[in-house]
Length: 533
Image 1 (cartoon, rainbow, N blue to C red):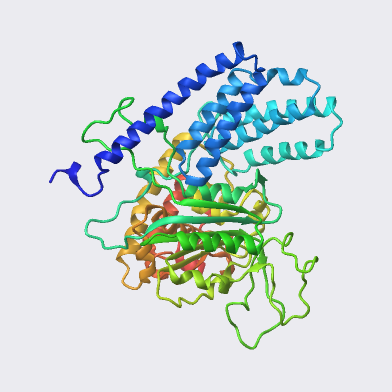
Image 2 (cartoon, rainbow, N blue to C red; image 1 turned 180 degrees about the vertical axis):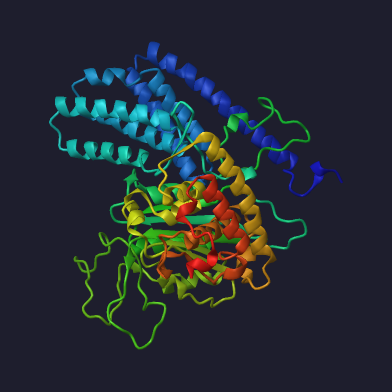
């Protein structure tokens, strides 16, 4: 058999479907471009009305991205939003004495900015924010409306979001380089030949954000924003996936584009969270994994209990706004009762009937150490530190250090070392070095004789493999950093990793010191592991 005939190949019928779709997608854009002209000249539609049609199409593409997790649809949304701005469809709105039309324009800007953020078009985001600021100023001066403060808050939120990254990469001329942290084929360490790992695939992910006072924009906290990108492949344009328009070569197949389906839940109530958990659990295909990411304020237990069960350690906060009984929010009456507005570890037990991968970034993440694998299915929990040094804690509004490590280890490493900028050439050298480190960590995990099999069962999936490797790197780096001296300042996991084989490996410690030397921050790390204990 030739390489083009293996079981991974897409059948000819499906290949034709993809080809036809790409052709029709491109054709529909051409038709709509022609339709704009007709609507404008023949039917007398005002330009803002044409812009509104294009904006709704862009929003449909964006919602389709949210439903399918197919990042290519972001490019389609961007193309429509970009055309609106380039052709000034909303330009005449400001001359009309109708505030509701101006609000349509402001909403368009907000949606356009969200798409640009997700596509890492940061230079354009800054231009759009400036334009939005001018539009809001004009709107508030012309109309005395009640939503004036709300729009100013939107402006503040997006400005803080743009500035959230603690470290910037600079060109030689000091201009900022935009880096992407979505999954690329070259960034995932390959499995060793002959290595037997699980064949599970990450199919669904719940990304939950409920941190107080964290930077957010459009119901996305900065932690949610980073994690959703960590669970996506680099976007491509659907219309350019084929080698030439409307056709594929006989032995060619479209690029691999599978992304896990994601639910983004901003400050959900317990009822909402459990509803989405249940729906995702129900629809989970065979040999698939459900990932639950919790970035939330910790809820701690009150009082002492004779029996320490899965509801006695607290958990993470859920929203209280809409959980109402008999017309009023129910409060705890005594210390024996458990916190109601909280996702306890025990609440996840029913969902361990299928493979479950949990990430908890919270001040009470340690409550999830007390898991019990009741059903023998693969189960792993990655848990953040619960205590940070003051210099790190002061930056918490700009996102959690733990999630930053899972999103971009080099960005997090540079941040925890106090760097605010790194030159591009050094950044690229450090990234290249990290790829070697990741390969070594991958081998540490797969070659360990004492590691829990759950880690290996998840290791076949590229997204989960990279998350596990970045988790080990984070744990090892913080253990060597001189500021991180308390046990609570280190990440933990359930089941526990064999420390000598992974996070305390002498080879990995050597790599971390080499990276620190490369960045000229070696004085911040213990250069002899014995000094740290």
